[in-house]
Amino acid sequence: MSIDTRELNLIVQTLVEHHLIDDLCEPIKSGKEATVFRCSGHSDSSHRQLALKIYRDQEHRSFKNDALYREGSAIYRIGGGKTRAARALRAGTRFGKRVQEGTWSAHEWSTLELLYANGLRVPEPVYTTDGAILMELFACADGSVAPPLARARLSSDEAQALFAALCDDVERMLGLHLIHGDLSPYNILWNGESYCIIDFPQTIDPRFNRSARQLLERDIANVGRFCARFGTIEEPGVVAAEMWSRFQLGEVC
Image 1 (tube, rainbow, N blue to C red):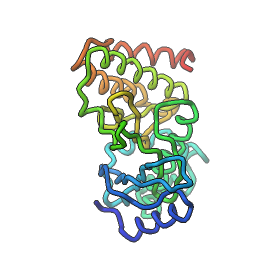
Image 2 (image 1 turned 90 degrees about the vertical axis):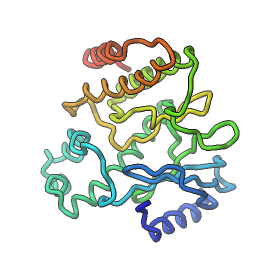
Image 3 (image 1 turned 60 degrees about the vertical axis):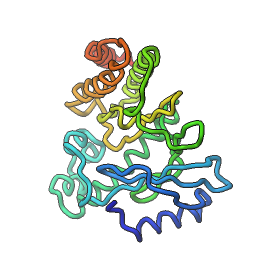
Image 4 (image 1 turned 120 degrees about the vertical axis):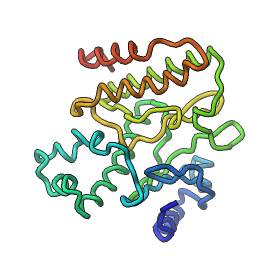
């Protein structure tokens, strides 16, 4: 799992002391950058279940094409990219790696806050501490953890409606100057009736990243490829091109 036990215990203790959770229940997802645990919400909490995402340390993480996502990020724009943090990131020093670890978790937290506040279908962010995020757990009607969309079998009508809804969400994110950058059926949860988009550490600002259009097209192609297995949908390439055109014309909101 590559999560330090002492670090995990300290995070859980902090959350218990803040009356956010009663205890850690079980790991529910272990990915390339983090492990997610299901937690039981404290009696003072409005959530019966919560998800605790704890990032792996730098040595055990393997973000693909990390530089692709970092291009144009705020840490490089502040001070013209000449700050100590920016220089350390480029050099890959030990300090730079610590900066990078904090940057990914802080970026996901701020992204979740922005998207949730604007009504996007993302988990409600609850609390953050160094290298960890506590958020709403998206569950099925029986309380079980909602599985990835990749496991779902959809009717033709469901597939068409889902693709349209996801494209609408992608465009609303674009209007907030965000592109997910790694959207796929594996980081969209499906509870049989609705969905929730997760995993935002790599989101980029399309105004400052030269790969923005490529990432937007890939996100839409990924969900389009899945939905097209079950029904006829709009051509993803056309959807992406028209969306990007609206963005460039300032017509995305």
